[in-house]
Image (tube, rainbow, N blue to C red):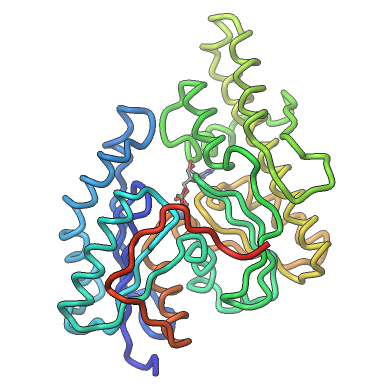
Length: 342
Ligand code: KG4
Ligand code: ZN
C-alpha cells in the first residue's frame, strides 16, 4: 500500500517553517527548514504574531524548494501530514491552512500529527532498529516528558517537568548571561571549552524518587549566582564558559538520572531521546556512556532531526495513514494537545 506513496509533511508549530517529502518506506526525499532565529533575535525570544506572519510569507517558497529537492511535483503527492499541536495557535494555523488547501485541491488524504509524537518518529527515519518497547524522553523548548512506549502509537506518560522545560531553561539562562538566542546551541558550544565541575548546581527533584523534573529553581540559582559576581567577573569569558558548562552539567545529570530510573521501573531494554535538546552534545555523550554501563541501547536521531522539522511529521503521519487514519478538512489546531495517558 505504501509502495510509491509520497508524503508531504508540514510543520509550523513554533518558529521554524518546515516542509518535507518522505516516501512510503520512511526515507527522506527532502527536508527543508527555514529558521526564524534572525527575525526573533532582536526580541530575545519568540514573538508569536511575528512568527505566524513569517510562516505565511515563507511557506510558498519552502514548499516549492521541498518539492524541487525531492524531484517531484504536487501531483505526485499521495498524502498530506501536518502538525496539529501542541504549539502556538497562530503558527499552527498557518501550516494547517496550507495543508488543508493542498489536500482539498489535490483530492488527497490529510493526517493531523501530534508534534511530540513527531519528535519520536524522527528516530525511525534514522534508525530502523529503534523499535519499541523503549522509554522515550522528549526534551524541547516547550516539553520535558518521559513515556513508556510499548508499541508505536501507544504511549504512557511516566513523568514531566513541573515548571520549565529543559530547553526553556537553556534559553533563559543564556539570556541571563548575555549569550544570545537561542540559548541551547550557544551553551552547548561554550560548554565544550568550559569546566562543568567548577560550580555545582542542583536541579529540582533531582534526588527525589520521582520521574518528574523541575528546572525553574536551577535557573534562579544561576541567576542569583550571576547577580553576585563583580562587573569584572561578569566580563570574564573563562568564568562564563565554566558557569554555562556547570549549568549544563546539572540539566544533563537530571535528564540522565530520570531517564534511566524510568528504564529501570519499566524494565524496557532501550531508550530513545528526541526533541531540540537531544541535539546537545554533552547529553548525547553522557546518555550513551550510561547506556553502555547498564547494557541499555540508547538511540538519538541525527542532530538535524532532533530540532523541529517536517520529515518527522511526514513519518508520523505516514504511520497513522497506514493504520487507516484519515482526518477531516474541518479539524482545528490544538495548541494544548498532549501525548499519552498517565
Ligand atoms: O524541538 P525544538 O526545535 O522546538 C520545540 O518543539 O520546542 O526545540 C527547541 C529547543 C530550544 O529551547 C533550544 O534552545 C533547544 O531546543 N536546543 C538545544 C540545542 N539545540 C536546540 N538545547 C541544548 N543543546 C543544543 N545543542
Ligand atoms: Zn519540537
